[in-house]
Structures are given as C-alpha cells and as structure tokens.
Image (cartoon, rainbow over all chains, first blue to last red; front, side, top):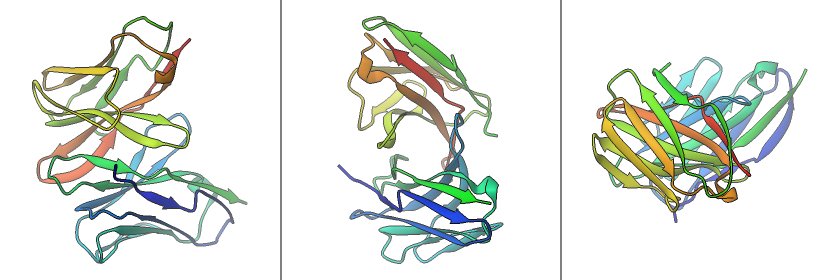
Length: 112
Length: 113
C-alpha cells in the first residue's frame, strides 16, 4: 500500500532552536496536511497545502508542498517548550475520494 | 473546534463482546472518518463515509463495520472484539467538498482484555 515516510522519528532540541521535519512518498498527493498531537488528545490541524511549491506559514510554523508533489516539509522557528508533541503529516490521495494517509509522526522534545 | 464529539471516551471490554463507538458532529459535514492509532503505525483509516448510508472501506477495515443513518452520527462497530483491536480510535470530518482540511475528535481509548 501507499506509505508516507516521516523523518526524523524523534528529536531533542534546545529552546530557541529551529526545527525541520519532512514527509516523503513514492506517490503523488493533491493536498498535504500537518498536525500536532498532544498526549491524550486528538491531532490538531496546523497547516494545509494545496499546490506544488506552495509555502504557507502559521505563526512560527512554515510548511512547503514539494514541487514533485511527493514530499512536504515543516519548519518551526525559535522553538518553545509548548512545541513539545508529535507532529504528523497527511497526504490526500489523488483518487478524489477524500481519503488520506498519515506519516508515523515526529516526536519533538524541547529542552528549556 | 469542528464540533466533533466521541463516546465513550474510554472503554474496557472483554474479547468476543460487541462494541459500538459513536461519533457525533454538529456542523452538517458530509465526510466522516474512523481511524485507529497505534504506536509505530500512526493513524490508519478504518472506514469513511461520504454521505448518509454511503460508506467505504479503509486500509484496516477487517473486523469493523460502520453505519451512518443520519448526517450527524457515524457509528463504528466491532462485532466481536479481539485484543488486536485495543487502540485509540479517532473520528474525523472534512469540512466541505471545497476544502480538504480534516479535523479530528478527541478520541476513544478502547481496551480489549
């Protein structure tokens, strides 16, 4: 089946540092979504991307839709302790069925 | 907040018993989904619905059935629960046919003993 490879799986960073993570696939996607999940809660949508090459920001978060449509990137600038959590990417399949597949997540830990 | 509630939020049940999880939304969204989340697997689609009585299988649909008799409710049933179905289950909606943004409910933690 189709898979999304998300990396890194986990990372420790110092407060104030910038963070980068990405998702790659052998499949082409129409839409990329990025989520953050805190323990015991549902994923919260951070950014949605709809066009190849698109760069979208949400506060300190910036995400990009790769030009090949097979990858996407999320950057967090000047990390703070509340950025701790698991970040997921999701790609909308091109079949037009509104179905998505998810990456396995990047666990972010911020050291104060 | 996309107006999604899930019930129950926690459930412990025994192997072989039937279990039904409910997802309720208040904003008349057409598309609704059930996912399960397990360590190392991320979120995997079980079933989804594109309208009342219109449903389709996801990648891990074996052992699960769904029903949607009203726009606002999407039910997930485990006919005979097994220990491998111990998981956290999330309901999600896509806001409209012109937006591909997907929003999640708070989740149901199910333990099958």
